[in-house]
Image 1 (cartoon, rainbow, N blue to C red):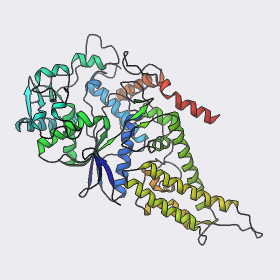
Image 2 (image 1 turned 120 degrees about the vertical axis):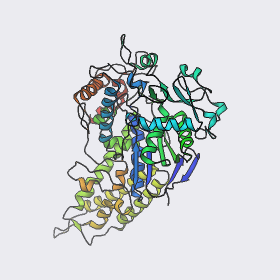
Image 3 (image 1 turned 180 degrees about the vertical axis):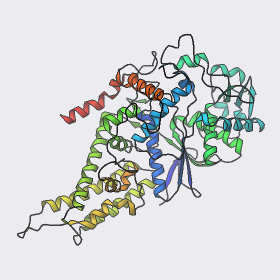
Image 4 (image 1 turned 90 degrees about the vertical axis):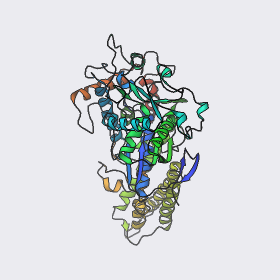
Length: 527
């Protein structure tokens, strides 16, 4: 069975196709705050897709950008003594983002391109669009003319006539059409924008962010053009898969298609996959709303395996609710898997595991689980059905071990034997079924754990609990970055202050209120 995915552009399920290596571009994070579980949901599903494609025999070229130029980043300059420039803030939160990715045991992307590294490519792309007549200069800024690109709106299923104005109010007098969007903005971040997003009082000196020279003005790149420049630089003009959050369909991904295809004349992406949002109490998890749980705090409280098991509880394309019940279900499932793993390995390595012992029910269950798992994963990465297949396998393993353990010892002291071949088939099931393996584990049973069945590792980390704490990173950072990150965590995760600006909309909560549900049920469980 071939892999089938839900393609947003086609608006239907389609068979996945690729010629040779698979190029996968994931719309990454704007590093203006600590990453939260809403961001991590996209990371998890991109990770599962990457692992499953690799298990099907594809070489996956996975690129995920880091947006380190943004007014929200600029607004935080001066919030801590070490944050004297936009880059200082961006580096601090880039470090926490990479920490969180490693803590979640995600496969590393081929590269994580940053906007500040690709300004020359961005300028070249904008110049091409101007030369071809798709973009125009106005007062030092450059805008894309949406009426010049046939098919604009095809991803979001809108017509140009139906579109509302894009961009800041001060841009509208410069644009030919209200829906035109900025490719290059003259000058730095406006004082109004910096103050709007600030989490502290700037006083008399409002930061304006970094600027670069261009043929039109000293200024900054537009948000949408950054991804087009970075993706085509590292993966070529046509991507096999472009993946991102559902909230990016319009305008971000719609604009990426227009500017990329206008510049190259080629199709920008063959498949568009969009991940549904993570919700708490019916609202999107969001830094701006204030109802978020940071990845480091969730790792410390729940552990990586429970988090990944939780994400596996819903289809990537649907919304997912973070509640007491869904977290409790994830923990119960992970405990069930891990307990069965321990029993299987203990039985397999015991002297009672024999070459001639045979449990046909166990062996049949292994084959069924492998077949059902693969069918589920090829069915639009149906993780709930894949999980169900593996739960059936755990039941079969437990029945086998229970039957042997419960048998009466014979008069000569002998007893029933474990089916060595059957248990080994369970342990090695995913190797033979082309399922995916996780990264190396730090547990004493790393080799056995990462292969039993390795199918599970499509979403389970199989590593020891890893908590990401301030001051620890996966890459060298300077003291300012570490201090700034620690100060940020201190503000948002330890003091109980409201997250966001003083006039955050209703629904803002303290971090303690946000995570209270998890703390409650864990306390009850511990008695």
